[in-house]
Image 1 (cartoon, helix red, strand yellow):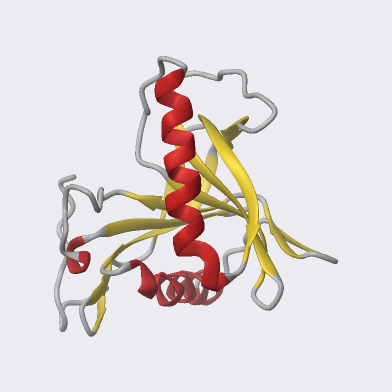
Image 2: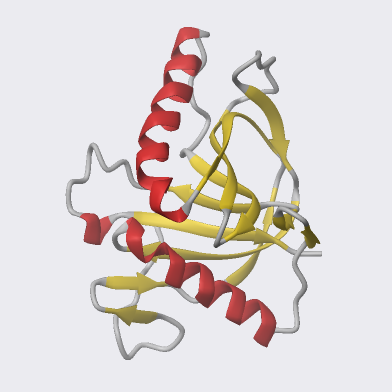
Length: 183
């Protein structure tokens, strides 16, 4: 990936236990077609749901003769920590494809995103998200989010799973990009 990750004591990066977070930054992202399975899950259910739905979507992509055009991701549409999270478990595609009654097709919007890379177990992504949200606030930036009866509805909030845990068994080496679209 070419990214240099600094350890404790070096400016701009934080380490907590075995977790590492790169310095947040603003990046420009191009639009990205994708396919996904959408579900509402609780925080406690995310791990099981991820295995189930990512397995399903990878199977769908393969079954339709497609090749993933990037790393799998979670797109958090609605967050209500007490009642549930509406998540799209997705895979980028090279072009827009038709979904079906189970798989939705969409496009991640182009634009400016606040972003950081978390290195460590997935259980620590809550802290990585909090760090990014704190940085956004400190920088005076604004995110695309609206309150709704279901919870906070985001324009585009992503966790992109850069490391395949099937290939890299050490969770301390797993890298995940956390990215939130800015307005």
